Image (cartoon, rainbow, N blue to C red; front, side, top):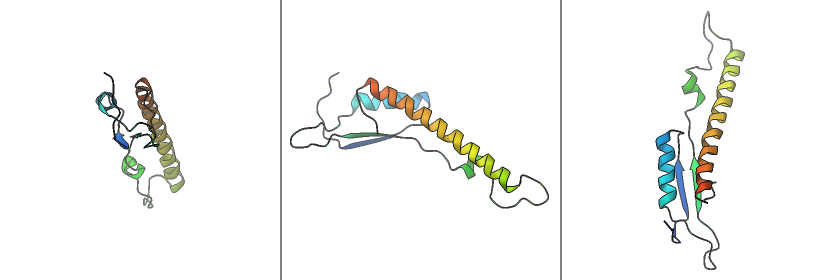
Length: 111
């Protein structure tokens, strides 16, 4: 299907890494018509893919306060939280890389 020039300046799509989400991304890429670079409009349309995650404090169930009598000390809590944050960044990068490859197949630049 040949896309005609459209007038959308910006499309933002959230993905979560599921197969359904990636199928939705393909559907959007099949159907959007972003603004093309022209003399009258030098700005191309933008396609932004976004991935959102819960804050680590919700994910880990840890509170920064002291735990009386037993439980991890603050330095262990901070190290555990940092490890979870690093893992979440890795997950987000993998999901956005996958979305970028799909977009590349459609000749659409992703921001």
